[in-house]
Image 1 (cartoon, rainbow, N blue to C red):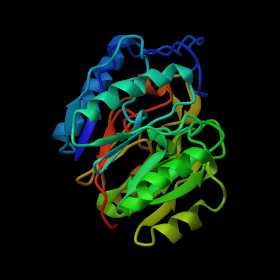
Image 2 (cartoon, rainbow, N blue to C red):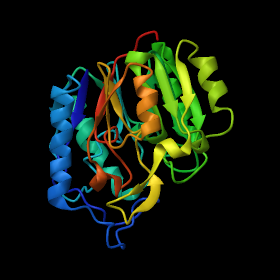
Image 3 (cartoon, rainbow, N blue to C red):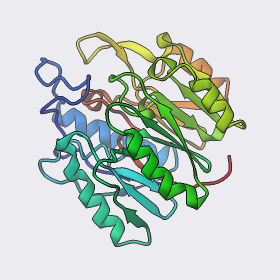
Length: 289
């Protein structure tokens, strides 16, 4: 398993383009030293707990969100589909990825300008791409353009509509645990037919909606507010789940599927609306689930 990670050298919250970004609050700005420590702990866990060798990419000055390596596109087999960000501040993050992949055997593809698309809306399960879309971030035109690229490669694209601005990326509220043939998600982020969509398109996977009380917490470093914990913005490999929080209910759920938690603090990145899955661009290798 290959993942790209980018050091948070210039990471900051300087404006707001999601509901979690609130730089005007006393606890809304990330602490630089804690930010770097949390990122280093993640890299260590990827290598020594999950058995993943990260690929390092250099950050660029003034690109405050570039540590969220997942978002600038989708890396799947030998194709890289570059993002078309809606937030203007994030658009310059795409060029370094496009240039880097241009120097490899991976083929980079740019979408038409009106096709909004972000890597955070992608969850790959075998040869199927679950692709989130809504009014913000990835839009319907983005879904159609990604379909044109991937379906000729025998990769199915299954659109899933997000319905709240708070959950603006699919991979924040839907995760796959490949070792257990398992999907977990937060139902309130989607239209009511989400379970039907998953069962129809991924019949060999078990899909489970986790309740709000398993996913929310009073966040000690964000004003003790009752917030979504980003526990589904996780990475599972070799039966271990790297996640920023795990409630008792979530722990029981994981253990019932022979999965082991690996919980690390990720509070500084949560202030910007992301956690460990956002911080990694996974090289997705398709196979039949």
